[in-house]
Image (tube, rainbow, N blue to C red):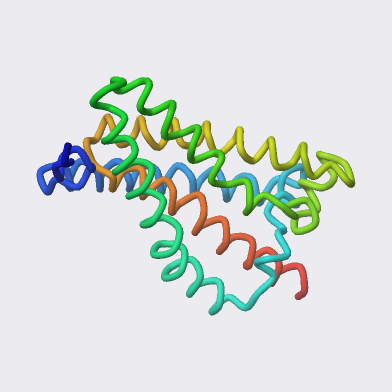
Length: 185
């Protein structure tokens, strides 16, 4: 039961449409992040101590590490291989749900300690509520996985979901670093 390039979302015939979806996703996430950073009510949500780093380091992280170690790996695994494998026996909707649930569970380890790394998360969940934070991260990333799977389905290309995935992670790192730098000036 081998998967084709089309099953994996890697068919060259879908690259243009996938890139267009990725570009729109990048613009939307960028606009939402800028608005969120400018609003006093939400600006502290971007102050993650992991990204209290020099702008050059943030650029390297956002433009090299995140695309290779996070986006490429996770998109091929969850919106490529798993979605392709599940779609044959389960259909598109169940495949999206199953791969997204697994995507959410994949984020348990990264969620550990998130409250201590982001003051807004800690304030919202309350001190000592690691279980609540982890459950929230798993639920949020599973829902994000559904959105990623839908972009992949509509475009036929993994480029669409990868674009949105990078925009949320990469732009988040860059914005957090810029806000930390501005805070120390």
